Length: 446
Image (spheres, rainbow, N blue to C red):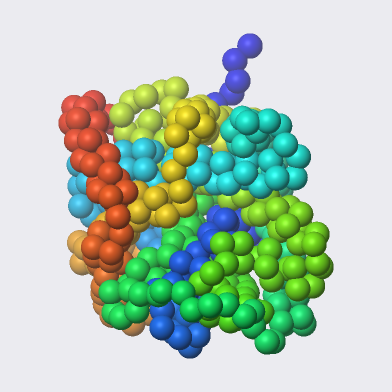
C-alpha cells in the first residue's frame, strides 16, 4: 500500500502557531550562555543592556525585510527561493549547501548535545550519556514531525508556553531576590568598538532564528496578511523576554558577577530556590533545547523539499498528504544531524567554537537576502506585495549594513572556527556544479 503524496502543503498554521514556532526557535540554549560572553566584551552595565536592546531592534528590522519577501514569495524553500529569484541559481544552491552542512543541521546537533549534557546532570547514563540523550531526543522529535504537521505544531506550542513560563520565573526570581550584586574580583574584559562588535555577534546569535519564518510561508493559512503579524509578534515577545532576563541577571550578579559566571541562570536561581537551583535550571535548559530542536526540524526540512523539486529528486520532494509534511526531507535532515551527533560524541567542540563556525556563513547569506529584497523591488516592481516594509529603501539598507558589520566582526574578532566554516562553505562548489547540471527545467516559478 502506498502513501498518498502531493507536491504542495496545505496551509494550516495560525498567527499564534507561527509566532510560537519563531519564539521556540529563537529562545534556545544561547540565553543561558551568551550573557557572560557579552559582558566580557562591554565596558559597563549600560552598554550591556544597550547591546540587548540593539539586538531586538536589529531583529525587528530584519523581520520587516523578511515579512515582505515571505508574503510576496511564499514557498517551502524560504531564503533559497528569494536568493534564486534575485541572484540566480548558483547562489541559491550555495546557500542550500551552507544550510545543510553548517547552519541548520549543525545547530540541531549542537542543541541536542546541550540537552544531553543537562539531562545527564539530572540522571546519568554513563560516559556516553550525553550522546544517548541527544540521539533519543532527536529520534523522538523526528518521529513527532514525521507523524504530521498538526502533531509537531502542537508539541511546539506546548514547549514554547512552558519555556516562556520558565523564563518568566527566572526574571521574577532575579528582581525579587537580587539587588546587591555578587562580590567578584575584577575580570579582564575587552572593550572598545571591536569588542562591542563581537558582543553584538553573541547577542544576535542569541536572537537568531527569526529568519526561519521564511520557511513557514507555505504553511500559514493567510500568508498575505499573517506573515507580518507572525514576525512582529514573535520578535516582540523574544525581545521583551531577553531584555528583562538580562536586566534581572545584572540585578542579581552585577557586571563583574556576569563576567565570572559560567552558569548564570543557576547562580540567579540559587538566590531564590537555594541548592536545588542546578536541578531547576537543568530542567529549563532541557525544555529550551527540546523547543529549539523540534522547531528547527520543522522549518529546516522545508528547504530539502524545495531542493528536491529543483534537482528532480522525487523522493526528497515528495509531500505527504496524510501528514501534510515533507517526510522524506525530515528523515534526510535528521540523518545528517545524527551523523553530526556521532562525530560530536567522538570530538566535542565548545559553544564558542560553534558560534565561530556558523556566524560568518550565516551573516553572509543574510546580507545577500537583504540585497535580494532590493533587487526584487526593482526587478519585480509590478508584483502585488501584500506587505511592504516601511521606510524603503532605508530599512533594507540598514539591514544590509547590520549584516555586513556582523560578518566583518565574526571574521575579524573570532577564532579559527570561522575559517573552518568558510572552508566548508567553499567545499560546496562541486555541489553547485552538480545542481546546475541536474536542474529540473520543468519546475514552475513559485
